[in-house]
Image 1: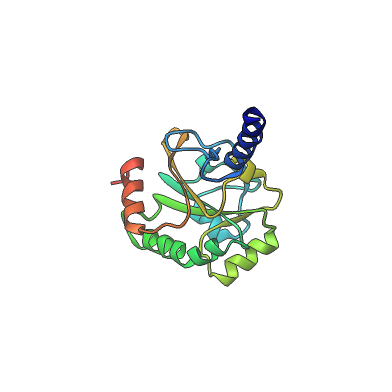
Image 2 (image 1 turned 60 degrees about the vertical axis):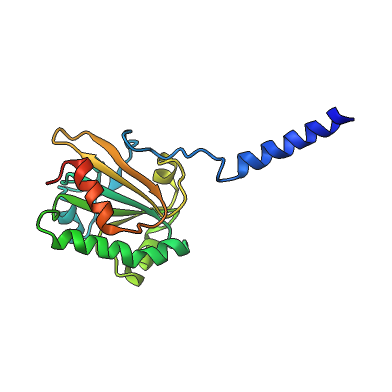
Length: 191
C-alpha cells in the first residue's frame, strides 16, 4: 500500500517541480558567456541607423554596433511589466546620451518577443521610445536567447576585435539606474 501511494506522490512532485518557475533552470545566456549568434535588420530609420553606427543595408550582429557595451531589452507590447518599465528605460537612455562619458559607449536596443513590426511601432509611439526597437514576430531571437520571460535585460561587452561576452543578465525591471550604469562601466572597462 505504501509503495502504491509513493509513486503518485513522486509523480505529482516531479510534475510540480518541472513546471514551477522557481525550479525551472533558465536557458538565458548568463554572465561571462557568449551571446548566441543572431541577426537583426539594419534600421531604415536613419536616426537609429546612425545611433547604432551601422553601415549599409541588410542585417547586422550585436558585435557590429559601435559601442563598448550594448543593453538588450527583451520586451513584449502585451507585457504589463514592460509597459510599466518603459519610462524607466527611456530615462536610462537619456541619462547615457546626456553623459559625455557614456554617450556613444553604451547603446540600448529592444527586441519585441512575438511582436510584429506593427506592434513594435505601437509600443514605440505609446511610450515615446527613442532607441531602436526590433520586431521578433516568429520568436526567432527570443528562442535563441533562451525563451526568457519579459522584461529581460542583457548587457553585452564588445571588445575592439569585435568579439563579445554577456556581462549582465537579469529578469525584471531595473530598480537602480545608477547601479546598473556603474556595473556596466566596471565590467565593460568604460572610464
